[in-house]
Structure formats: structure tokens, C-alpha cells
Length: 141
Image 1 (cartoon, rainbow, N blue to C red):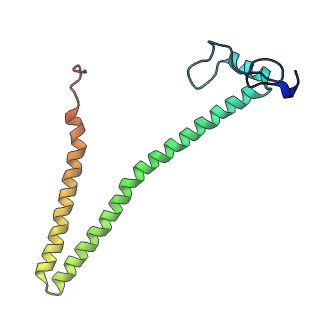
Image 2: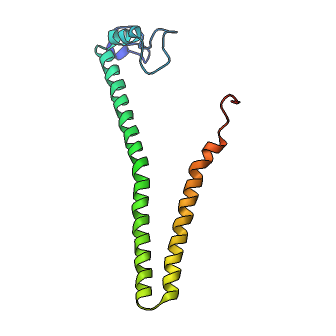
Image 3: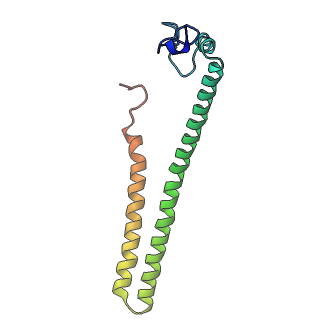
């Protein structure tokens, strides 16, 4: 059979490129028989498939690590910005009090403290809610 006559289901050696029927496993890694079948059709295919699986696994681990780092860094960044805004507001309130403006000082300072308390309490409540919604052990549905 000439190379020009090779169809989509056949290789240049005349065999079928598809793995034997009923032998394709479920999962990431192919069975040794299937890898051997591919290697007989195209030399080096088994090693290429294994390298592809290894590279995909390494990529997945790298992406999971980046996602975890992002989940950690976002709250930290929020805390830094909250600290900057709070300090700015308290310095502004102190300056207003220093120059003899007690009403703006109390509004700015008091509003800042009330907002901080509200954020703290709402965050604490959100953390405690999932624990209350859990079913007691033994009462699984």
C-alpha cells in the first residue's frame, strides 16, 4: 500500500490506527497494550503519550499552586488597603480636631470606627454560618 493510499483509519503499515475495540481504559493513563499498539503503528508514540501526560500533570499542579497563592494574597491585599484607608481617615479626623473642627473630626473618626466594627462583625458572622448549616453527624441525607 503506498503512502498516497493510506486512509484515515489505516497507517502506512496497513494496520488500524485505532486501539483494539473494548480495550480503551477509562482514566488518564492508557494500558500498556494500547501504548504498545500505538508504538507499533508509529514508533515512539508510547513515550510521547507518557510525556504528554506528565507535562499535563505538571501544568495542572502549577495552576493549582497559582490558584492557592491567589486565594491567600487577595485577603492580604484587602487588609493592607483597609489599613491604609483607616489610617488616612483617623489622621484626617485628628487633623480636624487639632484645627478646632470637632464636628467633622467626630463624623470622620466615628464613621471610620463604626465601619470597621461592622466589617469585622459581618466577616465573623460569615465564617460562623457554614458551621451552623452543617448536619449533625449521623443525620446525612
